[in-house]
Structures are given as C-alpha cells and as structure tokens.
Image (tube, rainbow, N blue to C red; front, side, top):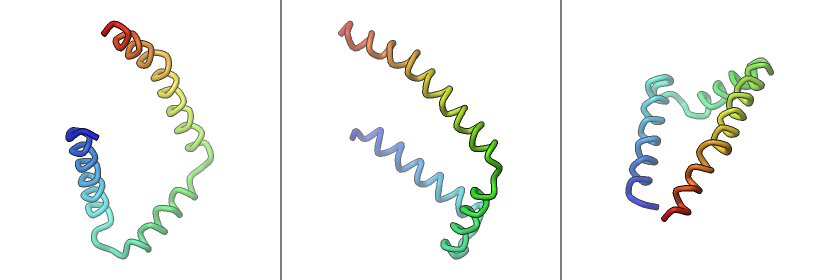
Length: 77
C-alpha cells in the first residue's frame, strides 16, 4: 500500500472518530453501539431497498463506464 492510501485511511479513521465523538460524546461505547443497532433495526424495509438500489446503480455504472476506460488505458501503455 502506498503512502497516499495510508494517509487516506488515516483521514477516514480520524473523521469517523470525530463524527462519533461529536454525535455521541464520550459515552459508554457499548450503550451507543446498541442504540445505533436498534436504530438501524428499526428502519423500514423500504429504506434498505432504496439504499440497495442506489448501491446497485453505482456498481453497474462502475462496471460499465469506469472499468472499460481503465482497461483501455492499461492496454495502450
């Protein structure tokens, strides 16, 4: 893994920790995790279907648009 990848991972971890502490503070992590899981479990099935559909659209777009262009650039080298 190159240094840019490690830097990106570190930024994601720091941003996640900051978002967590901003939202929940320094409360007991087990209690907050249970609250998060309860909130996710309480969502309607339509929310999961919409999120799955959005993910599917992005995945198909990635497969049909980005990968062929990347492959074409790799062959030209």
